[in-house]
Length: 279
Image 1 (cartoon, rainbow, N blue to C red):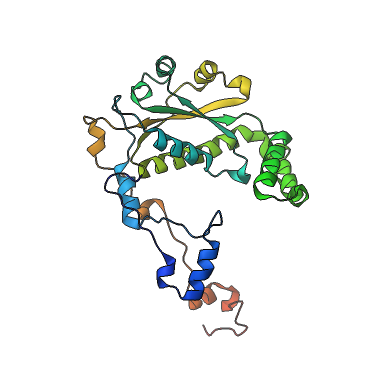
Image 2: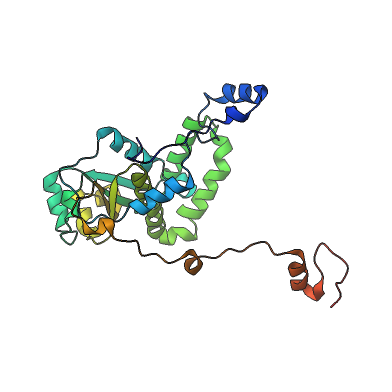
């Protein structure tokens, strides 16, 4: 359910379509997945929620995330993208109060660890093997019904790159990068659901690994994310965001007009124009 004040716009493409178009769309309506997004947030709604979110410093320990909302957040993690779709991560949700107290001591005693509704530890795989690639291929054939032979080239590409190729030498960094993709997806989606979040890197990864028994499973802690609902007295909730303008952090490489392209070409000749332009 969208957070208070956040409406969802349903765009009915059949409202502006002719009878033939409507029939085609109706026939394809039951297919999953669909290329047409069934629900669309407009620009203002999205920016409103992104401005609403912040790295919550004080959670209300009495407020808990509803079970249905948390199930949705779990699916957000499942649906997070990763390179090749290999999903080299593990997400551990900590709700045990005693375990949280232990982890708090390994997280600079930050109160978010014990006060939030749910604490998620994001861990990466330490090694990528051919068995990991085989697992993805098996899953792909099951979900999409593709024959294994059709995925042979894809299999070889993954093995030659991540398992045996140059990137295998720094695969731990590669898997950590994938985990941060999931973290970003988690925080943005939580904001759209009206759930507060705080990403946390100020922790002892080795200590977390030992407490959670991750090394034996082939994983290592990357970071954590506390989720729940802000306390009314958190002063950071109303603090203005400090961000640079896009012009300071980004740029756009727009297509050049024809005469600029021609001027930049050798001898003033554009590849599509064999005649030399007058100087």
